[in-house]
Length: 429
Ligand SMILES: C[S@@+](CC[C@H](N)C(=O)[O-])C[C@H]1O[C@@H](n2cnc3c(N)ncnc32)[C@H](O)[C@@H]1O
Image 1 (cartoon, rainbow, N blue to C red):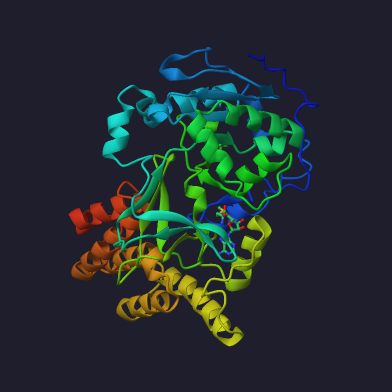
Image 2 (image 1 turned 90 degrees about the vertical axis):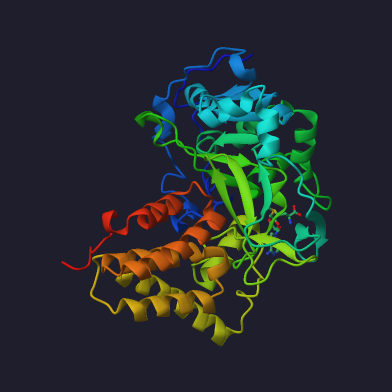
């Protein structure tokens, strides 16, 4: 093992011109996630994480964790080859944070010897019989349904192979990042390591930076919540090799969420009909509510392609009409917010849902529209209408964000007792 060097100004090297957060798939996040944070370049003040002076987990800690292995600055590699019944995982982080992650209940459970049956029962890390990987013209490889798949069916569910403290991109030189990544990947069990490298594809010319390219092009923000105030600044990215095969569409037929901040699940969202055999499966890499130019600029900047999905390829006049609808959605949602304004709620909800429908957003992103409609009706004391939309929000919320999501829990509580919900008669003062 390598001891952790003291953290000094010299070894907190800043990568100017590298947008640390840009390449991370995060359709469920607000647009700000996609901007280079203001401290991305020239961060002489060093990382906000510096106060997490390494407090390393003991070597060979329980549950199969080993480390610290290679260290660069405050960041070290920790690994667990037994994790998730032998799939394995490696963490790149400071020691204290790595320790906190390893002790999260979901990690502890998946590190235990009983993880195998749990994973089988929850169909996690199991190859889907309905999904194939194929070459897709103009996009490299992609995922395709080999039989019909109904809305709400799970497509893929995987634990991450790598969990990486995002600030490591800020704080370390490219060479140091490469050394950590090489070590982390080398510690994965063979099958998982092979799957990691498969993300490179066939056509790519191999080079020294491949491993960084893989991580930058194929990772997701992990909404991990660590206990205690000290971790508020910590955010993570995860690499899920099998999930990386989804291509992008601004109006996708699959939605994903990260259960417990860690397990990547995708569900089919197509409606009114099911996904048909031969149809490509897609997720959205960007905020689908952004206007076309912004969506295309983001796919171009972060993944090197200009989106050619049906919504982006509309003729100019229709694309302008689409952009106009997206602005309107924002406007109507604001007026519908409980207590916000006196509006004719029936008319406004009808307008909102019509805008979503015209924008083909209802199937993959219907949950916010139904939710605001439910809250809005509840805020004017219209209980039956609130229930109607809360039920629609519930279905959409489960498919889009998972049964445990905050949006689903909120609708369950509204449905349970509309009059006791915070939104009840909020607009009637
Ligand atoms: C997460 S990977 C998806 C799998 C990838 N197609 C492959 O063969 O490994 C992201 C990369 O796929 C390609 N890609 C994804 N969606 C695309 C789209 N809608 N149009 C063109 N290329 C796309 C881009 O090269 C992008 O950098």
